[in-house]
Structures are given as structure tokens and as C-alpha cells.
Amino acid sequence: MTTKQRLATALVGALVWVIIDQSTKALFKHILAPGEVVSLLAGGLLALPTYNHGAFLSFGAEMSDATRNLVFIYGVLAILVGLFGWLVRSSRLGRVEVIAIACILGGGLGNLIDRCVYDGRVFDFLNMGIGHLRTGIFNVADIGISLGVVLLLLGGTKRRPSSPGSVKA
Image (cartoon, rainbow, N blue to C red):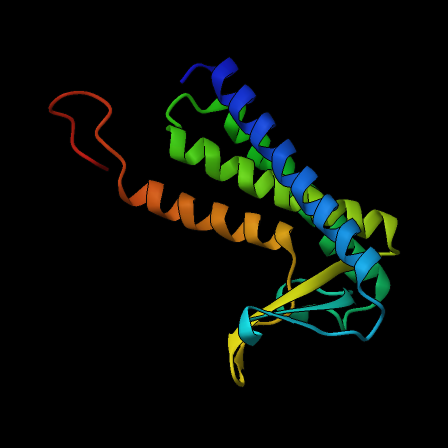
């Protein structure tokens, strides 16, 4: 892929994630009252609104406000800038890696928007599981980030040699 193709693919993909994430958050903030739990898919999916100060599974929620902002706003921003730089500079990225970066950028930006708007918190509203075996509460941005990481891992394991006869390093 050319640099223009990588950029266009990643920027459109990231924008789609941000739009879907922010739209679903707005919808669920509108239809769910604080403390309300809505069961969907026979309880396999629960919708319950919450604001999370931490990251995945509330990791870091106990940090001081200053430390949490440093890590979850400026740290995430640095990671997103680094991913964008990698996207621009690496001509070896394949389509899967570019899509993965788009997912991570979009999900990261979606949660970063929340942190800037909601005093360092992220709006989470989804919970999946069967019976008592359940996930933590998450949102669509988290799905994008997770999907992107999985795609990067899969893309890295399926990398083809760059030229005939070359050996995979």
C-alpha cells in the first residue's frame, strides 16, 4: 500500500469507529437512567450505564487524578501519535495492520474524547456473559481497541517474506 492509501484507509476506519462509538454512547446515555440495567439477548448482553475513571476492568481507577490524567490522557495520546507515525513511515504495513491501526486509533480517540469531556472518565455501558461468568463493563471504543490488537497480533504472525527467497526474521 502507498502512504496515501494507508493514511486514507486508517483515517476513514478510525473516523468510523469514533462515530459509531460516540453515537452508541449518546444513544445509551439517552435511553438508560443511572443505575438502570437492561437485559438483551436473554441476559447474554446487559446494558448498564457507568462512568469509569480507569481503563480496562477499572485498572488504574485508584490512581490520583494527576497520575490518572497523565497515564490515560497524555499516555494514550502519545501511543496514538506513535501508531500514527508508524502508519505514515512504515511501507511494510499490510492491509491487516493498517485496519488494525485504524481500529486502535478510532477506539483510542473515542475514549480520549470521553476523558476530555467527562472529567477524566469514560462512559461504559455493555456487559456480556452467561450467568455469573461475565465481562467487565465496556463500550464500543474498547471493542475497536481489542479488535485492533488482535488483528496486529494476527498480522504479525502471518507476515509474508518481502521478496522471493528472503527469510522471515
